[in-house]
Image (cartoon, rainbow, N blue to C red; front, side):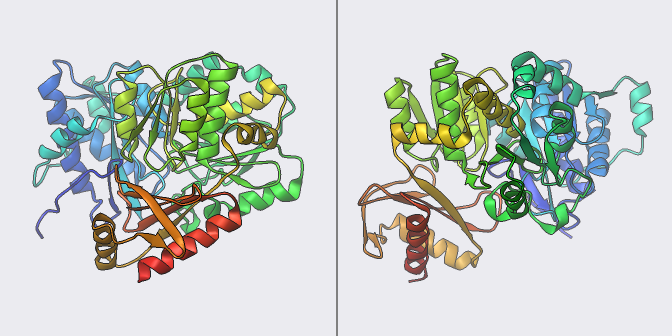
Length: 468
């Protein structure tokens, strides 16, 4: 069988376990990582970790062996860890690369390989392309044991979770959070955030915080359709003030209010900007992905903060965070990074930030959102993922490029932006965006309108237009 061509997408290389994601192919990527490191460092080092997915320890062992055999000192986490823990580890251990074996929010049949940089954030696109170009057609998996590499001084098992907890304890007012009386619910989605959140907030209500590498068949993406059980738990108990959910590798956040209503990342970004700038008094540029609401621009204009819009993929935001003074970088998909931390999205960090905001202000999430609405106006956002044929997907994207969508139903398109995908600004201030996923075989359709009913009508209207 001919070896597959391995390509890194929006956020790493992802493939189906046992089909393309095999020990041999992981070894190929690990070999390229080692060569890239050796070209740039006299003393090449890597931090390595895996999340809760099936085969994580096995694929981590292969990666460690290939790196060690090729002259790279490896600091490997013991057990599963979150992606931000590996990113922080790369910074703290002065390593040239952090490797995380995760497919993040993808369905349980997938696993993946993410590359992190020495500064504690995503490797920049140019460097990822360099690693990609070094991937050989085949790579040998060494027979040497991990114990032997330890004895040689090439492999060290390190406490990445402890390092991460120490960083949190030095940054957050955990005493104020724990003494606030705020009842928190946490859904790990069977992912890598489960253990550390039980350490940080032992009195919280926990859901899906046990070992299940198949995620009970559901993609661990913290969006409402995947969190219905969590929503019902919050609504039925009546004593929970905030619900936090994380994806499989805990770098994304989903949030619920006290009534079990989903609060999307656009609202989280607005709340975080308000807390960091207005309450904590911090300044800096706000960097958002193309699919984030323009209401962020409205809030930043009111606060005198600069805004920059990037293509979708946190690596583009991370690239700006390492060279500019950035207050917050955020994506529609729940990946958000803030000043005072590494330039890396972190779902646990953001959850603690929101709880601390509540503790410091004495206000509920509902009250804080209403405050935001006074500044930017009320809005609802929703996203549909269309599982359609590749042919239809390409046809729709070509139609977008050719300017064939001048209206959706009776909604007139006033202007179009095409930074990454196509964002159609409609009469009345609503918008629709169409973009193929960079990590899954789906077409994403995004929409924003003034109410849940209006946004659902808008999405349904767009679907009808796309079907022709």
